[in-house]
Length: 337
Image 1 (cartoon, rainbow, N blue to C red):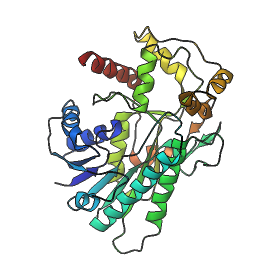
Image 2: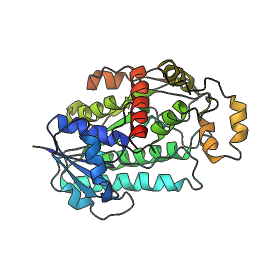
Image 3: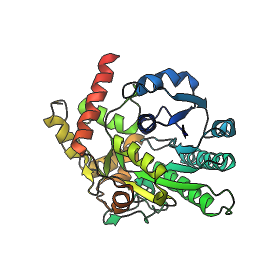
């Protein structure tokens, strides 16, 4: 049985990747920064599969310890772990350093161990963050010098570029293959009980009525279960080698439309009032969370996802279902606490 190392195993996307791998008869080794979270992750996985061919190891994006030992008995690597925050950090290197260094640590260890292939989780943040409109595709790269780019978006771009530089500068002996998945905004049911994830925070605050007004923000979204399936397809599809795959619907969804979908599904605390962008820009001068949103205001960038659809044979799941099921899982987690 082939084994896959999944980094950042307690994360929202990673847990779904683990489920998808176990359902498809792979053994999985999940990495955690804090091994005390092992039982929490196991309980989350059991919601979807009783296959327990799952083990854990301790890894940190900013430490060399353990990477070689983690890789030696694995066939594939899904490098999902990456720092994320909605807030604008005081120092952008809080995000950039672990994203870049962690990616290079993972790739170096994978090459040394003779891993067959790496699937790297990047983001549309590395593709279209500098754009206000138009269409982005798999050849588009975020301009990190743009005024519209946040520290997180810069970190994803720098980390992915570093990964491709590593891959493209190998000698032909023992060549490591890589495919990259670039998810947009990720929605869908949450498996674990951690409500701190970025997507989860957004849905949680919307259904709780904590957004007094809805900002003029749009993202290209995708169901988290589709993200997991695309990771597996990229891993096993030879034609995916050396390619980037945008994991998102072609048309972005406005945050207001998500709020309206949730309101119409019974979440009556949702406040359907649009926030003027000029007001948010003013608030952003004194509030770091709002400051993190300002570069995203009033963008509407279409996505050409044809490479993903054609090579990975992807049929996107409906987004309304993802939004509603995400809200439902959050409600269930709250009620269980």
